[in-house]
Amino acid sequence: MAQGGKKFFVMALLALVVISAFGAQACLAAETEPAAKAAAGFGDKSAIALAAAIVVGLSCLAAALAVGRVGAAALGMASERPELLMKSLIFVVVAEGIAIYGLIMGIMLWTLISK
Image (cartoon, rainbow, N blue to C red; front, side):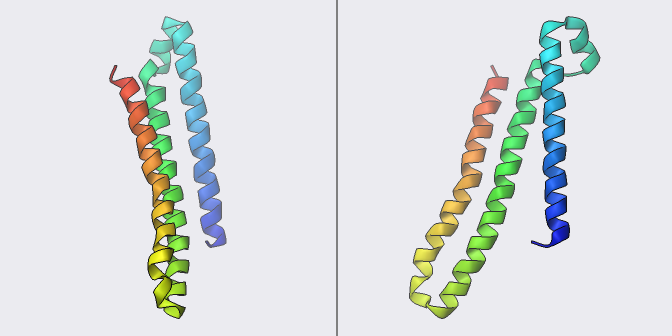
């Protein structure tokens, strides 16, 4: 990954952490004071929705980075030893599992909102 890409990734991650912290803080304030709930514009369910979005988004981003690196290495190895291609694709599938686990956690969080 290029130096500019790393800086962008770190800044985006920092922005998500700050946004989620403010959303959770506003949600906690809304639980204690009804007037703060109306002023903040956040309901009890908005922090859960934000957490679900962050979980799914970051897990998909991590899976994309992992599949990109592992897939490139697997194809590079397959060019030298073609008989090991199917064994190397197992690692690509394991890396894709990161996104599936994040999606499952997002669905579990989303069911809290629908109650």
